[in-house]
Length: 105
Image (cartoon, rainbow, N blue to C red; front, side, top):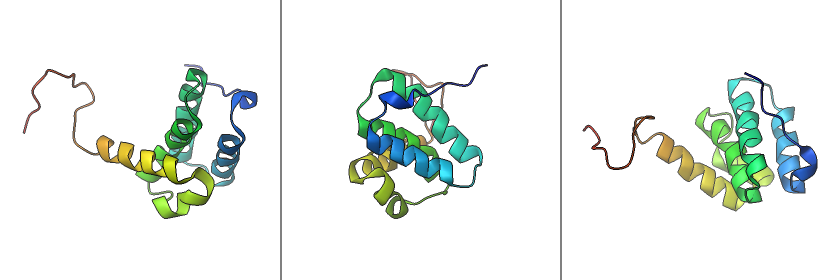
């Protein structure tokens, strides 16, 4: 599968700045997943805070950064959204679950 590409010209300056901050970190699976998620979200023309949250979620999940460390590069709204999304991801809902299906206890 071909990796997704990001058209940097379409990104808001603060998204580009956060992407630069991620690129400056030691590269691992979490930073790679972070950039991959941004590449998926960017063509959808999502709000900058949504793009920033997408870039941040893998970093929070992998404990690369905590919410306080992320504030300067990502901003309060994106950090709040990413934190909430990370909580949903850890809720134990199976990845193949669909609304209307019962969840196992």
